[in-house]
Image (cartoon, rainbow, N blue to C red; front, side, top):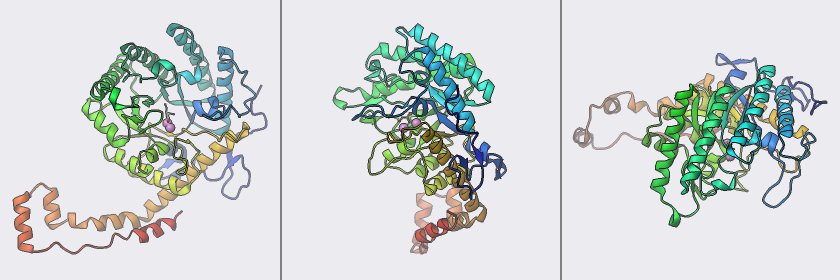
Length: 436
Ligand code: XLS
Ligand code: NI
Ligand code: NI
């Protein structure tokens, strides 16, 4: 039985449509900068929020109506849920999805049984992927919910927990490979600390480095060639997570010899939790050739935690797409909606409104960013702003032809630096608003 019998396949109807179940900007086949929107955006639906969230929060019980759930942790319920998920994604027209091992399949009473459950669900996922053509953007392992991970997974003080995590990631990698996953994500939810008095930080980070090297070694062994992604987040659930932001992650990857296999999965709400803008995190990752994928959502600055809301702010999506286009695109990553409907949005149909809105917001951001780039006004301004580096002393410094002694001589002869020019921030903000 269909879970969304009244919802047709969502179609592009253009900006004048008032149909809430249609795209107004996301036209998968429209070509922008030489690629279709579908290729640029590579939208992905997350299993955990969209099919496992029930509306509970630290203060209250579940609220969401999900008529297909039978309330048990049985395999049958998990299989039925997988069918519902694919019905949803097919109607939405999302080309990708992403999951944690524990979102899709229930844990058994032993690790072997848990693996068996996961295999049974993977059969269903594989069948549904073949039926619909929907692909797996990334797989990951949930190493933060179970009480065994209270002190961390790869960074646990308990060596057995490290071993359990290794077994779990080994299996998750095998399933990701089997389902043709294009990436594999590590989000270190509990890889950090609550208090430094009880923490050997050096040892924990060394263990994490070792763990990730074991993962790439095993990937090589089984022939998984997808990109590994680390997802930065500064805090929540721990006070401090080692993967706190893009720069910290990249430093970690360099220190532990992981730069050739890893990129980053940047999430908007995590960027702002770390005191940065999403555009900053994307641009920083891009400058280090580490921009792998994005978890598209948004936070609420007044609430201040990881609220994982759907992105609807066109200014934000424009900034994201400016950074993504600047660094050559997002594939083999994607725009993954790590976002959940609000606890008060209780109907299944709200899942459609949420995703359609997010997809349209990103499509609009893409179109606006492409128009800004085509106009070249901003790029010309930036080029002009740095033009002192294209000639004379600037050019010679960049070419490595100067040192402190020669620069001191240059400035003593000249007497004073050339005058500065205006940064024109307000002019540029107004300029960008012409396109939004
Ligand atoms: C939590 C993270 C998580 C990762 C996957 O804040 O965003 O959902 O994306 O483990
Ligand atoms: Ni995420
Ligand atoms: Ni998050």
